[in-house]
Image (cartoon, rainbow, N blue to C red; front, side):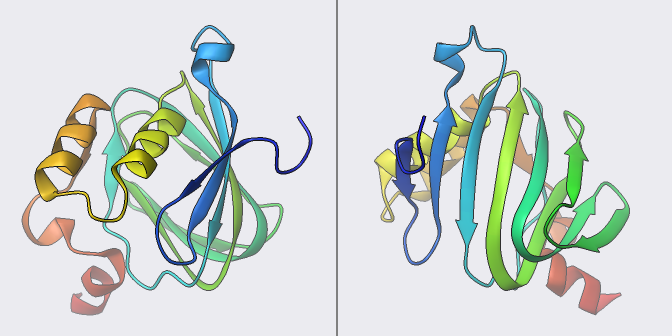
Length: 152
C-alpha cells in the first residue's frame, strides 16, 4: 500500500485517520491505522477489552497514561496498552501516531465511528463502544485526564 491508499476516516475538525490494515484482510490477527491529531488538551481514559494495542509516535509530543503510569514522548516513542488497561493521551503539539491492535478491532471501531459522522447520538456511540468492548471509567475517575490531574 502506498501513502494515502488506505481508508481515510474524518472524525470532524482536524482529527482524521487512515486505516492501513483491516482485520478481515489478515484473519483478524491485527488492525493498523495512522491517526493524525491536532492539539488534544483533555481525553477521557478508557479501556478496550477485546484487543491490546501499540501506539508508535511518528510526529509530535504526547503525554500518556496507561493504568497508573504516566510518561511523555515524541517521535520514536512506543507505548504498549495491554488488553483491558485504562489509558489515554493528550498532545500540546498535535501529531501523528501509528496504532496496531491485536487482535483486530480498533480500526473497525473507527471506521464505524466515521460512518456515524459528527452528529452521532450518545446512544449510537454507547452501542458502538459496547459492541467493541470499550468502556470509560465511572464517576470522577472518568473525567478527562487533564481535569482529573488538576484536581489532585
